[in-house]
Amino acid sequence: MFNPDVGSGRGDFPHGDAPEHFHSMKRLLALPPETRLYTHHDHPPSSEYTSVGEQEKKNKHIKSDSSEDDFVKWRSQREKMSEPKLVHQAM
Image (cartoon, rainbow, N blue to C red):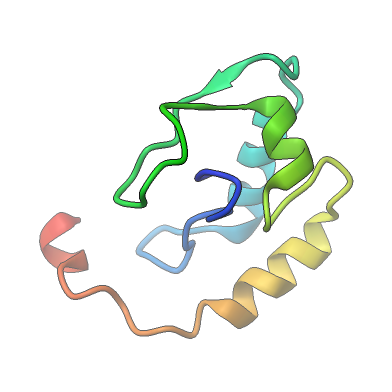
């Protein structure tokens, strides 16, 4: 899970699993709304952290009422992108 305006990361890398990705994010969304989430990656953050409550309201890929089927279908369609240039070195 990234900042709400970025949404979620790709799941098509080696050992990626869209259903597990979905369940992992849903576990985070089950935490109390005031829980801080430090989501930094190489995307410019709007602040140092976000909260579960903010993710529930603004995450562009998943909300508390998102279904696994919809998320997995969407991720599968989206992940036909080319792999990042340094993915193998990073793995």
